[in-house]
Amino acid sequence: MRDVWNTQALVESDKKHLWHPFTPMRDWCAEDHSPVVLVRGQGAWLEDSEGRRYLDGNSSIWTNIHGHAHPKINRAIQDQLERVAHVSFLGTTNPPAIELATRLSGYFPEGTLERVFLSDDGSTAVEAAMKMAVQFWQMAGHMNRSRFITFENAYHGDTLGAASLGGIGAFQRGVTGHQFPVTRISGPEELDALPGFHHGDVAAVVIEPLIQGAAGMKTWPKGMLRSLRKKCDEAGVFLILDEVMTGFGRTGTMFACQQEEVIPDFLCLAKGLTGGYVPLAATLTTAKVFDAFLGDVEEGKTFYYGHSYSGNPVGCAAALASLDVFRDECVLEKMAPKIERLGELLAEIKNEPGIYETRQCGLIAGIEVRQRNGAAFPWMMRVGAKICLAARRYGILTRPVLDTIVFMPPLCVTLEEMADGMRAIRTAAKEVLMEADP
Image 1 (cartoon, one colour):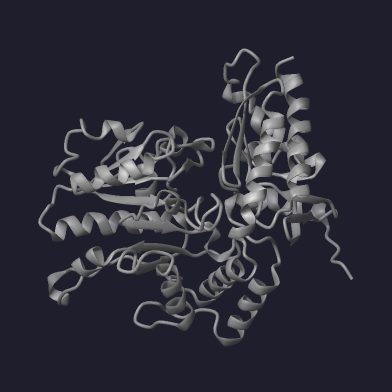
Image 2: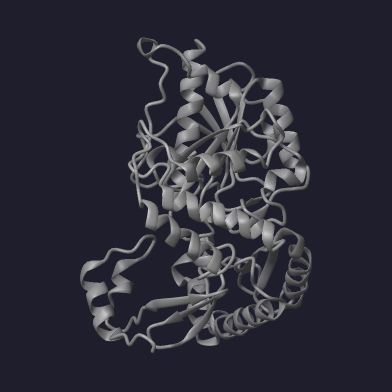
């Protein structure tokens, strides 16, 4: 027997009480707006309260890895709930957290990323890395080393420290004057001429490896990450990799940095860490960093940062089950034909009128639309949002980054499902673009 939902009552209550993230709430609460109420998921598909099915075209905001309701992850969560749902990570520990830290470190060469700090989400994973880096340099006697180097159009989260790293104007409003000192560059070639980079006031360089997400799925040139690692080593500066989006198979390898054989000083993970089931984040770092925090209490070396749900056993159990799925179902080994097929589908759509550019990294894709003359649409037209809204009628849910349509399905997606999803985007784009730029 299936659940029966009163969609109208749910929507009315939502509009009366909820405040949604990244959402123009006046439009949301408008009488003629009908939100999709999602109630069920299976594999790469979601179902709403009216029984309509949609391909999860952006993996539920870039989180879901193996599909919804995966039996192995469901069972792991249920088994852990039978033991204990949550215990403090301040002063006690628990088996799932211990095993997860061990297994995450095991993806990297011995003696590299051997320490794991657990928190809640991508922003806090980045925030932890930033605070570790600054405190490391302070304890080493370099009190002025608090500046971060980031990249134009970067996005690293919304907590105050992580937000200060961002290079997208919309996310900076309201925090100006309350930020870490940050210098933004467009590429590694600018570092050598940057004042303070060589043994100056720079604590770390922070980057999303291989591809920038909120910038519009913009890819970095091949070899760029390796070049950046070399420059950081020469300057004695930490390298922080934000793999909140790119981690766990999205790019074709377990972690994006593995494609250029780069080991960072800090690796930030979240989103897909639990398979996209429950919030959990991890900041991996080296013995060099960890050992600097060792000392007597009166020395003040303790890392005073954490969260009530750090090391949550249910989250860690889900993460362990997700790693088991990677191993047992040979997920990475099955990625190559899917990545190839996605490239073919993007090649088919890229010559359509209004399609300015398609970009791909592994199973991550961005489809940028512009006016026929190549100029960007005025942002107030919200063309990308209109395309995604229209695409719902053809069976896919996704969100744009301005006028770049994101296609990033769960890794369990089939070749046929990918073709269906891209067909839906293609049809919706044609409809909207004909009206926006006839």
